[in-house]
Image (tube, rainbow, N blue to C red; front, side):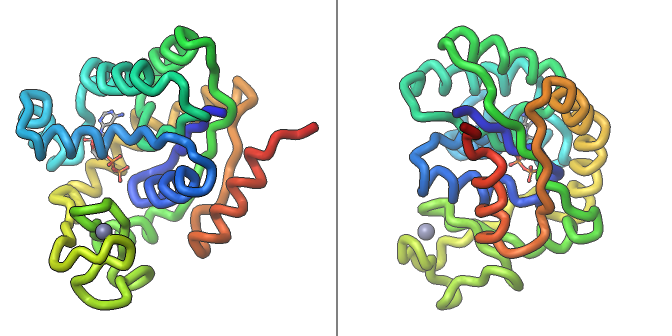
Length: 218
Ligand code: ADP
Ligand code: ZN
């Protein structure tokens, strides 16, 4: 089963993707995470992407498609993939279809997480990640039990804020979403694989809703 989580920045795609991977053994493919790793590793791609990402603009289709192609080929035997933050343009959507076809697979569902624009900004500006294990937190809605200590891996003082989680970059990211990515909603609707879910509510409730949407009907 291959699933795309679609939605604006801050809709909760990463949080839901991580939970689905823990519970179902899917492999999460997040181009945002891959680009941040490339930046950490100081690779050519990472260096070039860093300034584009900080502004909130989209990295070129060519670069992200190559990243996804490598991962899909490497993990071709997986139970399924959860795509989070990819595809973001129609060209990326076309490429994904071809890539899946090349390993004899196809998309099962596209889940659109919708959240009001006003809610998104407060989610974005309060969030941080454990630099060791990648667990996601939020100052107000999901603080760690002990300040500065990761609930999951116990790392101390390893929390990191993303440089693009500020108001200016957020505006650009939201615009990029409506301009370049939201046309995918119509595209997948026409293919009859689009499912919609309200992205407001508890993490568990949304997870249950997603599981319900992607349940095989027999
Ligand atoms: P969010 O969805 O919260 O905005 P991501 O981690 O998915 O965050 O992406 C962060 C940034 O990485 C984007 O603003 C963009 O610059 C770049 N990026 C990630 N995925 C893609 C993609 N599929 N195509 C182009 N750029 C991407
Ligand atoms: Zn951790």
